[in-house]
Structure formats: C-alpha cells, structure tokens
Image (tube, rainbow, N blue to C red; front, side, top):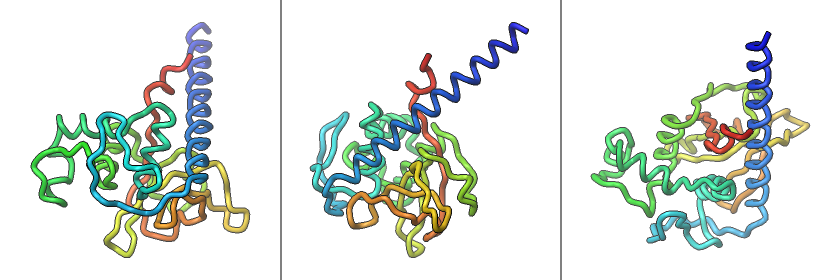
Length: 200
C-alpha cells in the first residue's frame, strides 16, 4: 500500500510539472507574437552565454530560443556545450563544412536543434493526427524540399480544422497559425528543461 501511495504521488508530481511547463512555454510563445520582428538570418557576432541578435530581427529558430530563454533555459549555451563535446554527432561539417563549433550561429540552425532535441529531449511520432501534438511540442518541417523550419505547438486549436495552433516565424515575424500539416514534418520533439522535472 505504501508503494502504491508513493507511485501515485510521483505520478501526480510528474503531471503537475508537465502542466507547469506547458503553461509557461505557451505563455512565453504567445508573448513572442507581440514583438515586431523582421525576418533576418544574417550572421552576427553575439555575446556568450545568453547572447542574442538584435530584438527587432530574427528567424524561426529565434522564436524557440527566445521562448525557452524566458523560462531560464539558454539553448545557445546548451547546444554549444553539447556540440563542443560531441561535434561529430552534429551535422555542421556535413551541411556547412565546419570543423569547429560557432557560438554565434550553431543554436540558430534547425538541424543542430534537431540533433540537440533528439539527444536531450524526447523524440515523438511524426503523426498525421492532430491529437498527437500537445502544447509545448516542438515540430520541424522542410519547406519546398530544401528549407528547414521550426515551431512550437500551443494550447489553442483551430475549431474549423481541429488542428493545434503553432507559434513560428516563417518570414512575417512570430505568428500564431494553423500550419502544422502545411509542410512535410521532419521532426517532433519534446524538450522539458530540468527545472520542471525536479519541481516539488
């Protein structure tokens, strides 16, 4: 009986932590849509850690990076440290011909984020069913067969289609849109920062 109670309480704790993460990441994502951002992926030298390009510019990855940063999670540092220690597992050499990490840009590239989330998050099914996508899930796509893209699911559903809404920047700044199934899905992940796994 004691073991059952312990398991039950742990289950409640995990559920509570997940709900807290979902609530906070959704709030961070929606907050991002209030900013005027010009789509600009120019290479820029930025500080490290917690570095960012100017707030009035950004690309799809910056929506993810800035939203997680509101939660206290610096993907610039996390991606850099993992790439530094496991460079051969990342696609930087294969895709961009690089031999070393670059703190200015590595975390702003979708294929690198896909590798990081695969290694440190949960890889989920690339389903065609809306019900399989939950608030906080990260999704990647390939646009026109050649351009990688990334966005995050929020807790809103388009009542006409039943599709969960996505916050992303596809060229017009951070927006909330029903576009989950508009392009080929290449990845479906969940990355919950460690602080949400250790909440009491």
